[in-house]
Image (cartoon, rainbow, N blue to C red; front, top):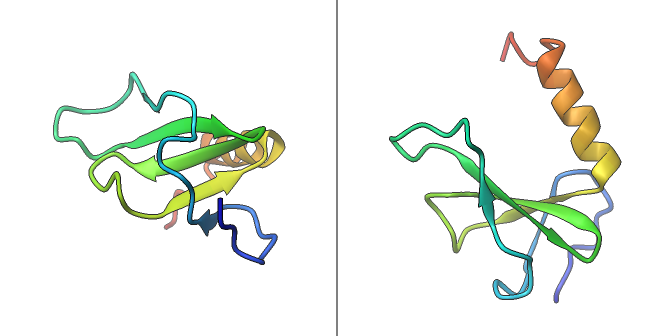
Length: 80
């Protein structure tokens, strides 16, 4: 696996597409396919666009992902 030298949350990496655990799509996904899929890889959560399976993958620690979800629920990104 080749990784970026940056240590920022949500960084994109080049990973072996066969390496992550089974990809999961949210049950909240809508029929038009605009959603993300998640998997685990080396103790990190990896996220990809379900319509661009060969595209970039963002990686998060479990803590970073939980913080991100909490911020969404708290309306942190409503103005975006």
